[in-house]
Image (cartoon, one colour):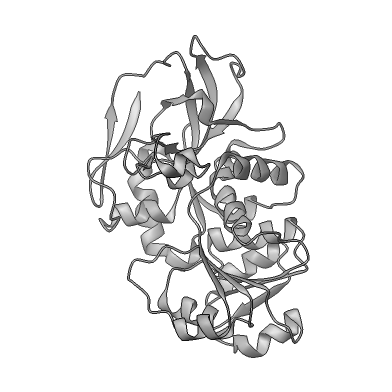
Length: 340
């Protein structure tokens, strides 16, 4: 079978390797779609702090079960599935206390252990998530980033009835905004410096959009939320400018969730965090319940994914997909690599 191996930053080789077999508690999945994530691009540039080479990437995936392990009872041949890409120890404090997604020994498929950028992939059945009928393989490959959004919102508690400001209209920011709306937010506003990304947000049903390169967000907030401004702010960029903006514009007693991945260490005005009694919260990955919620939102038609898929590449052109993301930049949202 074919397997894509990133042998070093900027270099992917398509290799022929043996097809794996499902272990007793595993299923073998024929991979159909692989989404390229921003974290994958960090690996492409050699800037991911926790990934070494060579590595097989691929953690946003969909496929169908083609083999069942001898001990697997609750899954069936031919089912469309995705799966959580977390390998955890089960024994550390976090795992023992229901926080396995931040396991002390966490390994993520595609980063610290091999991922699913190959034609067939054996995965523990306990990580597998069924995909309901009516959801395409492309959409199923995006359940992972939807789960990121659901978990991020869950870190702030109940979303229903709250005014939610999302900084950054890339794929994750878009999905955070859509998920907030789907979970009952009173109003949702999303910002960016790209009219292209903001137009996609509008297509996905996000009513209030602000290009912060052209408008003053402090003046725009009352237009979308009224004088009390945002109850909840989610930083989805991972940049100094946006975390500064989040803290500076936060209403007293409000909450900021840090979703974006920061390459450089930001400076945060902790004086304002203290004076305004802001809640500054981190978020990482997801749990099984977040995947289940993501699937239910998709099944109910509350999340639009097709407008986010801007480009598609065949598996043999895996490297070209990365290069396109690098070259097109602001004209790219989600790039899919497909295996027919």
